[in-house]
Image (cartoon, rainbow, N blue to C red):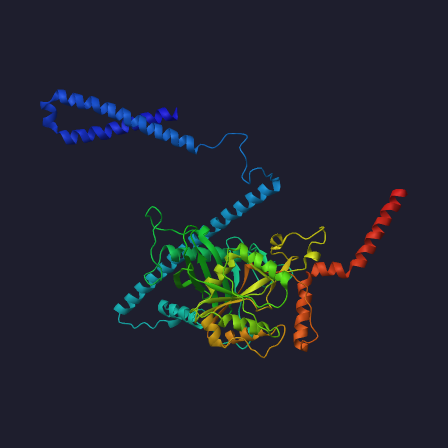
Length: 541
């Protein structure tokens, strides 16, 4: 029925259009002189109308068939073919979609409220200007409050950016003075300060935090999609020549930190799936509206990374490391042998200076580290020669024999790489993993060769960067894991090194809850025996 009605509508519409065009093109005199030819044209017009109406109806019918919902009762639900999903899975999926739409709705409401507020402020400004004009016309001089003037307000906000550690590093007294970043994606936040209730990886529970991150991502998209003339980015076209528009699905990762007396800094990275370049946007909230610091395009396709790993013995760990290395399609290796007592700083120094082909990005790594290809991109994005060095916080895994004590054998390493309270912790006291350019490393003076044995050399290098003008990017990253291994603290270590070694050994073993289960094992077993005895006695009675 709908197709027939649409057919008649198309027919009538085309008849009216073509009839009007026919009258305009032929003219009145032509119709009077050649009535037979007009009749032929009129007949052809009707057939043309009929054909066009049929064609449009056919196209619309095919479109309706294509867009009609599936009514097949045997159609499979979303998921992997052949895999059964329980009710909880689909409830969680629906809940996640609902949260996404609620977040979007909240964002739109907030934007409407902001527009209303801006409109009200603009009306007040116009009223104020009109009052000044009237006062000036009456010959009375106006002395306004400079702190309330819009130009002075903007000047103050920009001074907050200049005071903050956004464009240039601040010289800090020690490693305790640095303000670390926290990283986030569209759905999760990776945070350092957990306390007793927070988790190393979680969805932002507090509404203000969710709204803040949504607003920041939307502001970053606005900067990219509507760039200013001073932005360092080129206009790109899509595959069909249309303007390239970024959306929230193109958001890769972000970092934020707050200097409590200045404001919050946001570093945002966007990337289209079919493009190689990243879009980087820096925003700053000086306890007021967000202000764009810069917007630039970053091409990392030609950025080479030298991964430098100092090693003495540890052949099994090295075999595991090389297996991960080979899976990431790396093929170029250089072995530098030193016939001397092992010194981590000495090994990294030699490895850093072995490259003689110009500027290069270096990743100082250990044999117990498992990293992903995505982490290497983060390394490229957060290190800049003469400006920034990257100190990622590693997620350190606990002893798998304790974490997976309920299993016969621990799962493969790839299945242990999860961010859970009982599986590991953010190793915020470790500074051994770092990405920096060779020129910055040489300028800063490299490692302190006076440090012998285990530990200490990485902290010295970290402090050198903190005392310089370089910006230190310190943030937890999801693609960098420290694999558990048994640690032995040698007697030859100094008291300070031995204390650090024992502290590291204790923290690496297990979470508080698992360590508590080990400490109170006898008490727990006694309780279980009493419960079993009481149950048996009640059954006999």
